[in-house]
Length: 439
Image 1: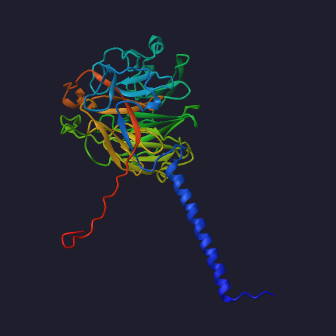
Image 2: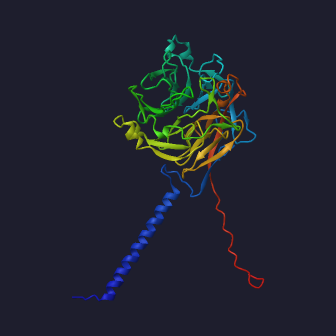
Image 3: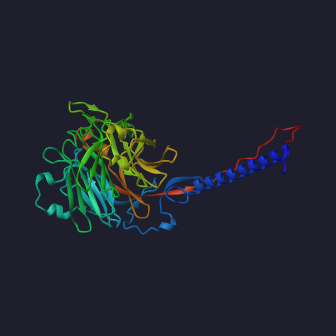
């Protein structure tokens, strides 16, 4: 029998320990390289990058957009691709690059008789849409009343969100088949799905689950009852429900709309004015299709909730509330969109600009201009470009005792968000103390 002495035992254990440490170190280094080199979408992501808005697209994407630039802004990297005489609010682009906008009707604007939905044509002009809808003999309840938002899904359907004007015209969601140029379906959203003071502001379409998610801001009159909620709609059955009603993440959390140094003031119906405090105004689905991102107009936070949970009718609003997560900071805004798996774009109302929520949750203003006046929602093009409108919402007659302070025409912009490397700066050499006049 071989006898192993004490020193031999220690040598064996020491060798095992060193090998284990080496294996752990190699695995950790490999995992770290994997995290630094690849995000969850599989894109190669350098360890130090930043998001910018560039005046032109990156070279690999080309510049063959369907919409030619009318002009470029002098003080911001945006181009104007169309103008309108009526105030635009919602915007949506299809996969085959058809661009649509909705027209404001509830803030004292003049009616030009061209309808509340327009298609923007490649030459920058527009036409009423859909023509077949207008040509039909409709009941009053079927007509559009207040279209604040649009969304185009991957199946070729344009969804038109009408906040309505009850009781004459009920709130509704209209789907228009763009391939066949025909009505796909109408889903009415009467009480108790909507409330007397509901204001349907934004919509996101979840094709995977065949669901729509609608931001009900509440406080349609800017001063009355709020009751914000996310309305979930099953697009197959038409069944809808109010979720997360009056949850803290859907309410304003302080801060005014202050534009050009002046706070936004709305009439209170009693001869005076108040500073509006508005709830959830924007919803968007994240790049991976797993979460609904949302934020309130006056709030300073972006939140998210899993789509699987939101689409589960067995979960109560209280149970859903426990699943809400804070994503990061944001300014007073009306629009939110995903740029990629790591960055969000948001409109910055008080700064006449566009900003980004970074992966660490911080917010940064990317660009601003006097022409980007109350930017609303975003829509993405096929080459990574985004389109948005300058609504000049705060200049509408409602907020100035009937006086229209709008500067026409309204502009539709194209922007090119890009990720670029951040060059690491070398640290300066360390200098030692002087000794006898020398180092």
